[in-house]
Image 1 (cartoon, rainbow, N blue to C red):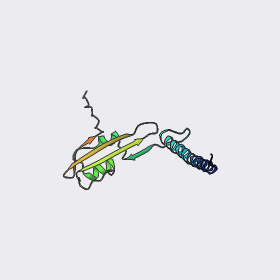
Image 2: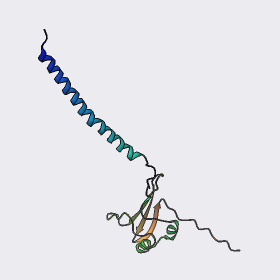
Image 3: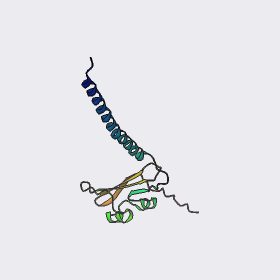
Image 4: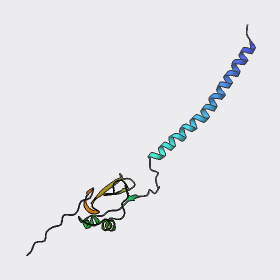
Length: 140
């Protein structure tokens, strides 16, 4: 003996399940593709898109380093190198100069220079820069 209402209930439940499945697929698949493309955009380079070279900090040249001499005052050092990027109020006798450049397609290049003062006079400096060795002139 068949129950016609039972088949109608099963049919109605299967229609609801199919509708829920369609709604789920309509929302889940587009969300997946949006997430996939956003992740892909952050890791790959688009062709014909101009990338900027990013420079930050103080540009320090070898000629600037060669001008530094022990005993220079703070104002003389500031005149040669410019204002320090990092102004640490807790360490007044050290100035930190930091320079970084990011060229598209290359790795980040970062250089540091620490200037140390004793009694407001240049004592020494250290970091990624060194003074050029001066060659003694020979008398002929």
